[in-house]
Image (cartoon, rainbow, N blue to C red):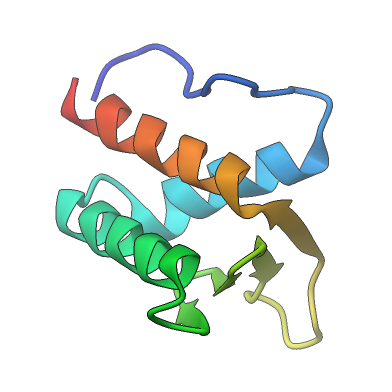
Length: 104
């Protein structure tokens, strides 16, 4: 992986949801191209209506995809953590950029 910071088109450093996306990709997806590709397949399936929703519990976060948004919830403490709802197109842009980032 390269030394540059990870961002994507439309990234806003002041947006807590954007920090949550970065943390999710870094901690739960990591540098696994297989995981990125599977995530992109699930995003497409939910976006197209093939799946009504999809959920993945990872190392530190729980991700839920719906046709409208991705919801990421912190899942590393005994009590419920912070969650963020992110428009699905924003999350998709971030995942596509992560795919590029880990292959550069």
